[in-house]
Length: 270
Ligand SMILES: Cc1ncc(COP(=O)(O)O)c(C=O)c1O
Image 1 (cartoon, rainbow, N blue to C red):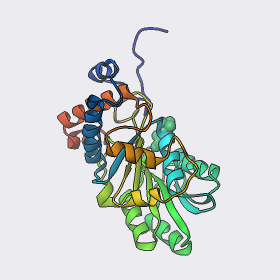
Image 2: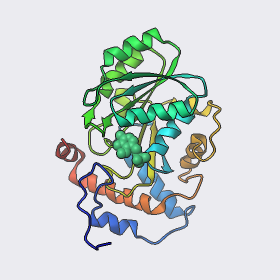
Image 3: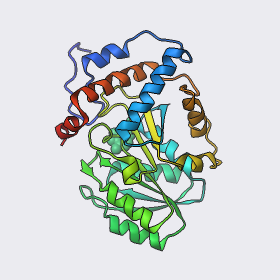
Image 4: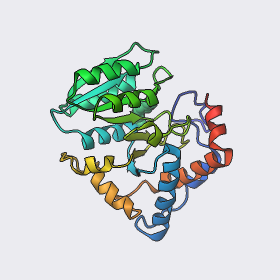
């Protein structure tokens, strides 16, 4: 393998700035000690600002798909009905996860390059009141479209009690997102795109009392049981050994985003 850094022209993994590389190579620390606790406290607060939420932010070891699967497993149970909004490959992935979990999966599919129509979502939910959750993709990386998440969310709230789960893997950090204002109940992302980190860190945010619904869901998950993550992160820990290097890197990445200014960063990605 040559020593030259690869010129990456893919949506992610993205190139890692040198100061983040340095943060990633810091020595290991006690993953249950005070330095780690302080790092978690800072990262939780900063990620809430990036998601635009006053709710919970949980960190997991895994790529983006692990966060998608965790969201599905923790909020719906076998044989419950869900609606998946498919505007490309990653919407289809949400549908595949739901099918693998034996859920009853409804889909609204639009052609590649098109966005989901919020009005159609409203009609669909009115006709199917048993739907417990709606899954959507903010930036459909396979086509580059940004779905109108704010309007879809408003329509869901108007026509149903369903929870709204959004995949923000290629969006969070690159575009302005306002989880609480838009009414997204569960928002997932991962490290390797706009956050400028290697793959392997997944992040899940939950709005307001969404947490209560998760607590009461009796799933069969163990490693990705969000109850464990919530309880540990309330004490600034993770239930299992955290990806310490990636968390150091995230701290550096957030510092870079803050220094540049979020508005400028979002403008640069347009
Ligand atoms: C929108 C979106 N969702 C989910 C994923 C899956 O993430 P991962 O490959 O990290 O599991 C990707 C990855 O490219 C993505 O762009």
